[in-house]
Image (cartoon, rainbow, N blue to C red; front, side, top):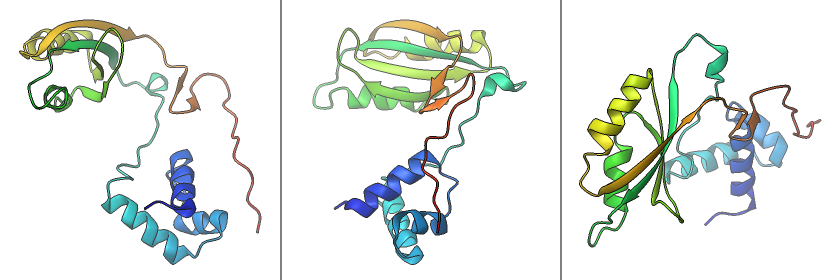
Length: 164
């Protein structure tokens, strides 16, 4: 289903989603029309889901509180953890939700404009879900590295230069 070209395109876009199909064509040696066709197929198959910008919000005026919540749940019969996870990740405050191994079942990452709103999410929305049996909330104080990008200091560009 996925060949070497598909994987190469995905790796390139993962490193920099701003890169053009023409640049991908040069980097892979594939025809630009083939690159576009492959990207469209990967989007249609929901392999490529989104092209986000990575922003260091700490360098802006935007106020935001981020937290990681460990959630213990009682899985639902015939649906396991999926139904509970779906209820949780539908909330607008939730940015990520993962099934985990270990001491807790789900790891939920969320953000809200204020600590009060984040606390309200935990006590009014998350803890009221009948399958949730316990939570532990951890607040993110500072981001040093995220998604492979260094937020503090000077990150180095480790990509190889492409020359014609």
